[in-house]
Structures are given as C-alpha cells and as structure tokens.
Length: 174
Image 1 (tube, rainbow, N blue to C red):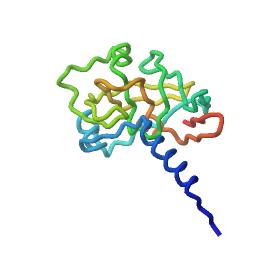
Image 2 (image 1 turned 180 degrees about the vertical axis):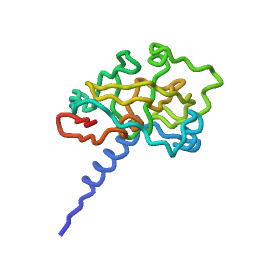
Image 3 (image 1 turned 45 degrees about the horizontal axis):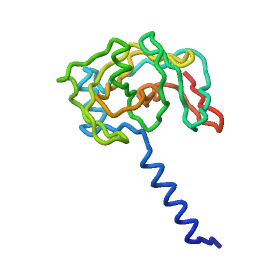
C-alpha cells in the first residue's frame, strides 16, 4: 500500500519547480539541430570523428555541479558540464578570449536559457579537451547575453563513447 501525505506532495512539488526554474539548459528554438547544421555548413549525414584520449573523471564541485577546466582551441576555459544543453555554449567574454567574435548579424539563432530567450551565433570550434579527452570540430553557440558561464553541452559529450555520473564525479570515456 502506498501512502501519500500532503506535506510530501508539497515538498516534492517545490523541489521540482525549483529544479526547473534554475536549469541552465540551452535549447534551440528555431529548428534545432537541422538549423545548426545548415548555419554551420555541416551536413547532417556526416559522421563526426570520435573522441580521442583516455578516460578521465570530472569531480563534482561543492555546489553539486560538474565544473571542468576545458582547453578550447588551445586555451583554458572553465565550463559547467550540462547534459541538458544540446550544444557547447560560450559566453561572449569567453568567445572573445578564444578569438571568436561573431559580427552582430551572425546572431541568427534563438535559444532558451534560464534568463529567457536570447540570440546566439553558431560557430565551429577546432577542438575541445577536458583532462585529455579531446573532440575535434565541435559545433557551438556564442550566446549574445544572459549566460553567466560557458556550458559543455552534448555537441561535445555526445561524441564520447560514454559518460557516467556518480555521486563524486562524472566519468568521460573517449
């Protein structure tokens, strides 16, 4: 027999609402991956090269998130690992430090962030490495405003053979 009391339902409801309200997910609003592929010039039928390197673990931070020191096009960038983000998303400041500075007319995409709908410019990064796990030619977005930190999304993670979350860390397998 399952017993449900009102206090438990209320606590669960508040927890669910809070988790959705604070999500850092980036979602395409204008055609999803097909629009991204068209705007970056890559065909959806292309098979991307797999990741290289050796398995590694990203330790869970004190805030409960997985933070990683990534090397993007050879430069260090702190990123939040976000499995809910469809692509790697760079803040405007991080993109500029990498030498990526899209013109205003390049911000043709729209994405949903925790801050609301914002404009984004599609770019392709030469490589992203996290503790030696490297992926080349990674689709990404430069978010015009409203993104507090860069996100390591599925355009990187999806190219791995596997990734696994544990209570202490996130294992990345090339």
